[in-house]
Figure 1: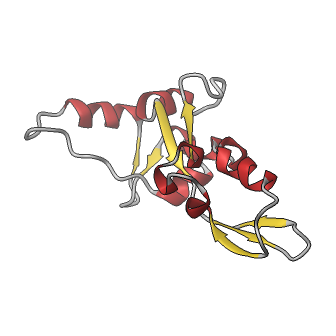
Figure 2: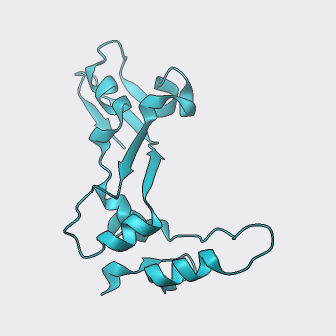
Length: 132
């Protein structure tokens, strides 16, 4: 049952109908955004479908052999920094896991979305890499 509800930052859990009601409610010039709880989003929510392999910067970094041992910010390894397409990935919830119990809510509330990855890569003296 809670899979069909989106957890907000204030702890409330909204159904798809509550989002529709919010969207169609008369509001001053535009409908205010609804803040979603990010830990919930990434663990039980729609963000659970993201994985590091979706972001090209990860494979690019794995394949690089020119990095000296040390700790590197992923955004600084991307040519255009945080605006580089290699640090972005997208999901269409209209096509992702249509058999899941929260499919209708995900498709209605989140639809097509994208995310940027951030973090660090540690290059060890032997050339192996660890992502943080």
